[in-house]
Image (cartoon, rainbow, N blue to C red; front, top):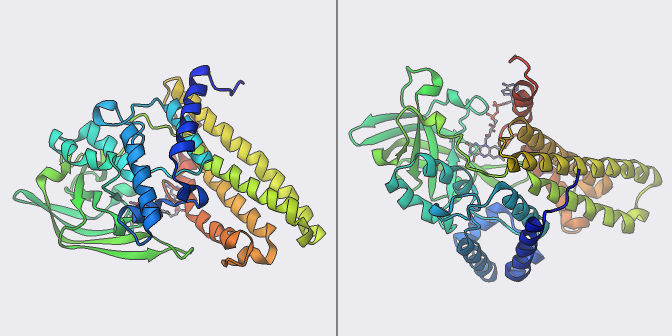
Length: 399
Ligand SMILES: Cc1cc2nc3c(=O)[nH]c(=O)nc-3n(C[C@H](O)[C@H](O)[C@H](O)COP(=O)(O)OP(=O)(O)OC[C@H]3O[C@@H](n4cnc5c(N)ncnc54)[C@H](O)[C@@H]3O)c2cc1C
């Protein structure tokens, strides 16, 4: 197997590197920025230089269409092939450069491009492309996560409006979002997949209450969202009424390799290895012996994760649609993230459990450990990924 770039890919990689070398703001090189921080920066937080840096970064990405690299050029994207996106994502991850746009780019935009009215496209795509309008995803409910089609939030037609009542949960960034794309039940008598409609809801509509859920790492990332007699005009229905379930699967030609995750894990491993080379003297010999073996395992595993990512992108390059293969890459990368975090905590001994600047890595090991837990739940749990691999990948009958 030859993993080297073709001359065209090498030229493209070099262009992305040059871009990052000149355009990535200094502020983001010194300190990594999380997706939530980016949204807060966009909404104009307190920290002037970082807000300015975000604005500069947003503008250069938007000018190139790189906020929505996979979208067709006709809709303001860069129309990149999955392979070009792969190189872009790999280089951004290597430089730890923040990507912006989030769910608006990944989920709503493709759905509107495929199923929206001209009016909806005109109204909503520009704000996503410029990284100005933040969208959240109102799908999960307290009783409906993996079995999403059982959702109970109701939308009842009233003249030219629908009136929505119900509750969503785990809504990432709802407290920072301008709009929400959501699913609600419009026909309770139809079979469960056939009575669901896809709505666009302005988060400022009266009757919406957002209540924070603080996760075990102490971060406010997701929320509960309550809908009480929320009126949504008919023009905000995407696609046909009662056919909303079938809209959620539109993804355009997004690269689905999880390459960013494996680059991030390799870099994390390298940081701990560098620390061990210097700080090994602080450890008892038996502890050192144990973690040394674990880091060797993690190093092998991160090579595996990288190869799984290459497998997905090779399929996409050949015009095939990765299905079980993308599930394998997601499952492996997210579970590896947890193993890397666990080995890091063990490496630091008693410091490993302490979230404090006095600890090595400013206490980040303990925080990463806590933050790694939801990775195997978000975007489809590990069990659901294994079900997909078993049925679609291995052809095994359903349970
Ligand atoms: C960080 C994070 C961000 C999220 N952001 C959003 C968001 O923005 N918007 C949104 O709508 N949702 C969001 N979610 C919710 C996420 O989609 C759900 O948590 C996920 O789909 C699982 O659903 P659940 O939590 O209801 O668990 P359940 O579906 O109740 O599952 C509970 C357990 O049962 C297992 N299980 C369920 N069904 C099966 C099965 N058929 N076979 C085997 N095992 C099974 C699961 O794997 C799990 O271990 C987010 C979740 C996380 C962790």
